[in-house]
Length: 347
Image (cartoon, rainbow, N blue to C red):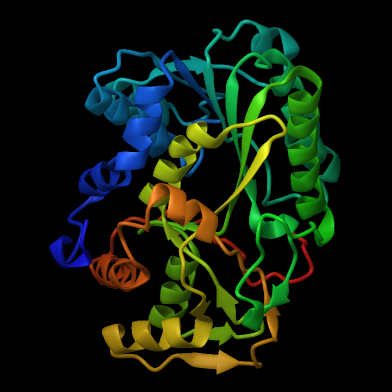
């Protein structure tokens, strides 16, 4: 998809969900190559609903009949209804309850999205239970499946901006308990892969973004509201959420034992100052900055994944245009700041 063929704006949430669930060619090919049912664990989060819908659409495009099953506690009934309407079978379950996990249907394909980040400080034990203990339980339960597990680039820690971003071969250097627990999540899936030959892909994502949340939305809202922008964490990666969904599903093709590590993000290293100045031009408002950019930041290099799965279909320039238009029109927001500017790992 060429950026020139993309619309000037996204009309509403229905259109947004449609765009967020459009599969890529690599996604369709992966779901054609690996038949059988697909379970999405933790489906009710920010990425889960449109990823599950994408799996349905990709399977239809591939000519493959399968059940796509979404599992979560579903504290918001509207999310469950939306998934049901999209053809995703839903099961309400608390994954930390072993009997409920055991009763989930078998499936040869599993996407693991469950996890905990915000609110980690002060409730560290729950964060470790969700991010480390639960992956161990899930890995044992689905040890005969191919598992794509969402992780984060936070496990690398900050790296020099001039280095071009962390690569999969770089050693982890997590900052703070959240990032440590995310590395623990990876280690649990690696253990299951090593012990049982389970084929696993670990998706180190920085950062998924759509029109209702994400780093670009956080920055746009600060410019719109005339709030000061801290430049200390001065650079970042970003990826249109549909592309993050598509690359995660396409990663079934690279699952392995030992577990494969896959960096997923856009190819650009974006400057906070440049992004805010662009939003300022679009809003007709002068951004207010404070402090200076540090020489390091949390940056991924996803060149390996991009060469395998293709470049993002929506570049940051288009995404910024859509976000600015969405905010000007008063489009709904999730009100879930990313806190990407945090440098001490305390979320």
